[in-house]
Length: 314
Ligand SMILES: C[S@@+](CC[C@H](N)C(=O)[O-])C[C@H]1O[C@@H](n2cnc3c(N)ncnc32)[C@H](O)[C@@H]1O
Image 1 (cartoon, rainbow, N blue to C red):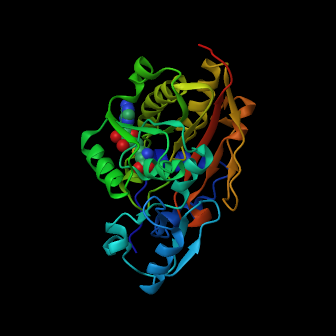
Image 2: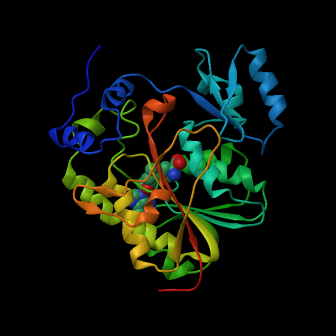
């Protein structure tokens, strides 16, 4: 088996976070992730789709933390099935279903998905909203928006507006407007290296730090678009504290009306947010953020923070 080439910076990063089981992490980087799907109940009843897939010999097992989420247990190419083409199923990583579970959008709400393409989480949000309310799905990248648009259509979603804008500009038009906001930020992708070995080879502290400034601006922008009482989830699929705890620490420092809430999802193995890293101490509330490591479920690694806007503020 080929082994992954890791930059020196990445080795230093991994050993700077004592709770990471580096051996297990490197092992997980070399293996494909377990396949998982979400049954799209906007188009058909869950039990009917399950029956159709079973008839084809697809073996499934429920993912405990994801409504409508299933592990695929046998070797079948789901993307070639008619059920997939018709939008009855959506192929989505099991841990990537967690941020929308934490956000828990409801029918009738106004929801902003600030970095939405190619639409795994937008289509999941739409499913939770059952066709009532409005989702604004935004991304800056037109090529990726094409994939988002095609996924939204394939899944039969009728209450989604797609926009192309730099997410940092959103408060100019939508300050205080949304019940829920998802910021699934662009990141250095250390939670999905088994899909993209390049992420490990080119990882650097400098790139991570540069990206963290964009992430912080996007998080602030998303927070400003919330109504009072609204909830935002900030998520990344990377392990770097600079792009995770640091961003949330700075967000709550600049927004005294932001409160971090704890996250509980049945069956998902999570670690608390780090309170210090490389001589930097974070706000003790950061413990309410969560980290999921790729080796825990043979799936993606993720970081999530759930933030409520308590009052009007700066
Ligand atoms: C992690 S991906 C989002 C994945 C998506 N939420 C999903 O579940 O399918 C991050 C996205 O952020 C977008 N992005 C990068 N910079 C942005 C910006 N300034 N404003 C809005 N979106 C941005 C990228 O084009 C990319 O599609």
